[in-house]
Image (tube, rainbow, N blue to C red; front, side):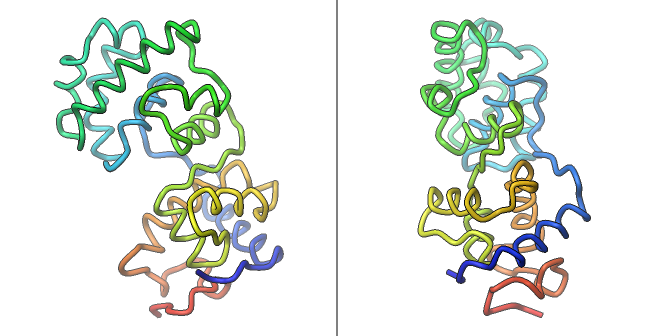
Amino acid sequence: MAKQLPFGTIHEIFSRFQVRCAEPKGELEHTNAFTLVVAVALSAQATDKGVNKATRGLFAIADTPQKMLALGEEGVVEHIRTIGLYRNKAKNVIKLSRRLIDDYGGEVPSSRAALQTLPGVGRKTANVVLNMWFGHPAQAVDTHIDRVGNRTGIAPGKDVIAVEKSIEDNVPVEFAQHAHHWLILHGRYTCKARKPECSECLINDLCAFEDKIM
């Protein structure tokens, strides 16, 4: 774990991210808040590319909780069987659809606590929905952000909750809305787990990682 970088360095890092990509977007395909919740829940231990391939057909016929319930668990299974843990995930999709109808009038709620009452929705999924759909600067920490935060010194923490808090506490507010997307994309394509591409890195002169591969 690298030491926490100073404010000025973090500001410069995110300034560079912003210049390179001013409006970073999540890679999961969705059409509304409901399909976003489902897509993110399905993405656990799966790639965004794999989830998108599976959900294109699913969302074409079931883009509301009511339509998803009408499709049924086996109908969901038929669309998502290429995704890991598909049977358990199909159960959760049906359960969360029922919960949305019974408890929230068929609408996706806009609070973290409410979102986390939905089957298959944890803190990370809730934060993705809050950020991407409701425009709240929530920080959804996945393995990429956990690695980048600790490796670079941008947001070190002993676990994902600590990293989330570190981002909230240390990233300048003007970058907060897009911070988690910049960090995810950086971890996915540059600051990789096994072979980080340090020589191609936009922030290699600012990063606190001691084992840079140049």
